[in-house]
Length: 95
Length: 494
Figure 1 (tube, rainbow over the protein chains, first blue to last red):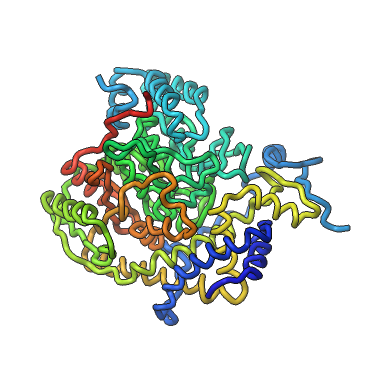
Figure 2 (figure 1 turned 90 degrees about the vertical axis):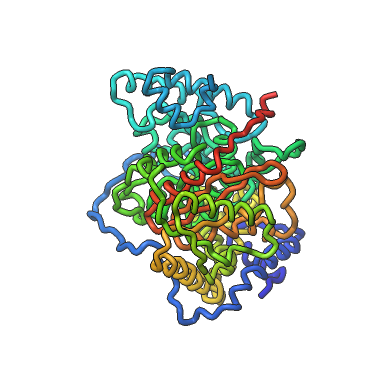
């Protein structure tokens, strides 16, 4: 499978990465090189094989359902590019 | 007398215990070495004041007879580990200015045991790379050069700063992370020892995530014993990482020097890849002979799905990366580029903040996870991964204790040599190391010989899950037979 410029544009948008039109051809070339490489997997039939979901056979541990951390909004907001009144701020979402 | 910064970590620990020098003196020796090695670009941040304060506290604890296992030993930390109050950026512009209000579990355990933080070490951006050339801080220069040639070489990657700093005597040991070979490949390129433990052995809490099902912390050191000392402090169960296992951490140092008589060592025929150089083949044969001489049995084995490991890796790792790196959106941390609305702000922030290789991997990951392609790519790769793990399970069930392979298909290459339009060329560096991450196994790279042009070459030992001790015993046998590979010419100090 290979990707065309329209697909690269769509994937970039899904990935939330702004890409200029003139960058698309080079990106398509690089992505196609990677896709051609992983295409080697088509040589193998794995339809009967279970996909790996966990490397180490571990049951997920349970813990008490209580608040165990938090109560320090200042530390959490300290790295925010913009914060106001104890909140992260973003550009207006709803008109 | 050997300069303090050129002692091994084991020797430095002994010197401190015997009062031959203080932790402050040892730390000052490293800070001076770091200052004289700025042209290697191994460190992104030097924490000199913090290091001196930590060294003073270490001296006080040594004097009081309360020394921890790493008391006063100066270490470097890969910039993938969150360090409280010390800038942590994964060497990406998108985390520019990020100062974590918390400490990663692994580094927290190092400081608990008395170690001294010298600074943060350069790496490929978000650990995506095999040469340390994708770092927003620029490439790291290896302390090694080819004989009679001043061409700057890569230290490997992604933990290039860690490898260069340990090889160049800029820290006594360092942390690294390994997702597809990011500890073992740079260790091989720099004549250092690099251990990637079993998935689940070290907590991933506070390590910046790249591909969560593959990422594992480990150590760089100048000797096998040094690596064993470091891993003991780094490993252990952590309730904050649900994939960290509840197993006792053995004293790995006890395994160093233990007999390897009767150990069965597998030589996988599939690793004899097309076009592998004569010197790598010879190194591999010599390594097998070293283990035979130490009393091990060497047997041929087969790992039939090896050739599918790298393609599976380049589906699984980017898919997980595209999900993990979704958090860098200009809202909670890092740099923000304004936009006309919130989506536009995300897109501009991420376009400006991520480098080319990171964008490529996020986009490949987004593509293979997108509607209609998930089964064909991601699910298929996870099925292939089951087969790769099964290959190893079968070999271990047949009585093999460890597997010996070359760490890399070549010695270190020059900066800029592999930056062509085809990203796959760089990916092939990890052909011998990615299988281990896909199967979650422990592996160690130990230097074992020189290339024709005088560069160090490494051998990799792959072990059974949670049997790192066997790896330390076998690696020590190789170190004793092959000798150590310290950099002789400190050219960067001139």
